[in-house]
Image 1 (cartoon, rainbow, N blue to C red):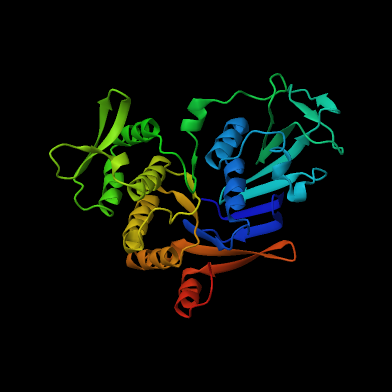
Image 2 (image 1 turned 90 degrees about the vertical axis):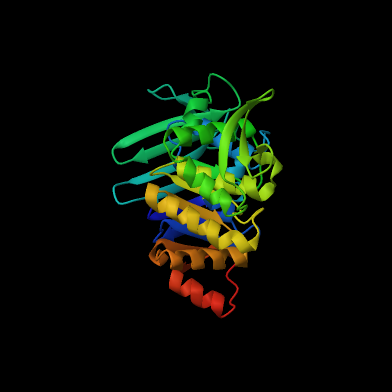
Length: 346
């Protein structure tokens, strides 16, 4: 489990550290305060074997187009003169990622065959990801061209990442949802997801993967004459499906959620949180969740108290002060005091 994350010169963050990370971590703050950027930083640092796959997957999830400007977007104030540095620490080791620009006018090839560019003033046409973890080091490039030393995107790698990013909003992929649910059923973890879905609609008695003319899809039994596709049952059902299946799918891994409250009615938030917390505890999964919702914060506090998991909950409020990120750190007790005294923590 990650205990500390340090981010330097990445997007809006010049130098920021989150310490004392727990199993459930809430990221709070106003719009454009850098909350989602912290999720991105963690995601990049957790995909060392194929950063191209992780980079493309994350950009797709957040609706970032693969244009000429995507490369400079990762650098603080769009300045490529200094590399991005992202460090993750746990009880066993530290992992550090450096992101440097690839500049086409100064290209060099090292003994491993990776091609990189020197620092300069021109716009980069790619990125170099350099990872160090203990005595292990690796470097790979990400470009829009072939033959620059990068690996191709590997779908099998993406499907088996130890980290899942759940975007704020995404087009529902019925095939991907069915495949993930099928994998969970093979591991006998599917009931975890069904129990979460029941919190939203107590008519639901079961979920099955069924073949249709269009392919395979998830169907729910809600007492009607026939089962109905989950995609018919509203955004909230699909949101909880994505959250619960993500946490249940990455035993020992990390789930990153942007705007976790989207599509979920406030009345079921405590029950949803309780289910996610139980799954995370059972499967040793760490969760980072961005939220703007007072109801969602209160629900997390209520669920952690009911499960006696207050020590596993932490919150971090991000504020931009004079161009620098300021972090206010709350444990569960301090967060509850702030919420009950109606302090603004969102």
